[in-house]
Length: 245
Image 1 (cartoon, rainbow, N blue to C red):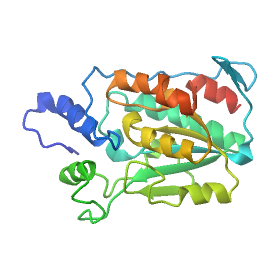
Image 2 (image 1 turned 30 degrees about the vertical axis):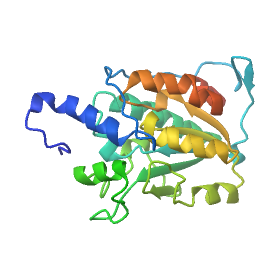
Image 3 (image 1 turned 60 degrees about the vertical axis):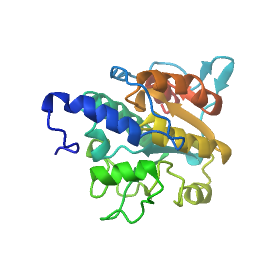
């Protein structure tokens, strides 16, 4: 299925990249400069204790009953935008989900979704108007490759943040969750918006860089070395798997 009606097929991927960056930006509306797509790494967990050293900060072992993995915007319409990196992202995140399940960590999925006709989209919302024009996120689903279980919550949001207008925070607090492992697509959209809120809400946060993606690799890397590093403990997939072992 083609989501972008551009006549020149040879320019389709380039056009997807440009339009998607506009859709996936944070609420600031800042547009990003294009850079070549780079695939995230596929890693396996190393042997060793479930703690790590990040700079001068050691990551303590998690308490599974008080921890949740929040998988954000791993949905079919979004995955279809990035065919070059989708297999790696899905493989990485499936490993993370399975490790969390085996550890007894709750797994939450969150997707952006709209009703037919987009009644939830304000004419003042630039990002929402772009989504409406392209006809996205009405009837897509969580990517089946992640093996979502029937008892794993699905949070439906109408904005970039998985917390805005949803009951996610109330659900987490009710279950005694104080630690979140957060991954998603894209880094400049749902991850940035949701990490900022969760940090302000006083959750202990971890992000897994190899399970996040943005079409602008420079900004993706910069976020993980600045805004995310100051609010979360940034882990590689291997480090996250070791923590969940």
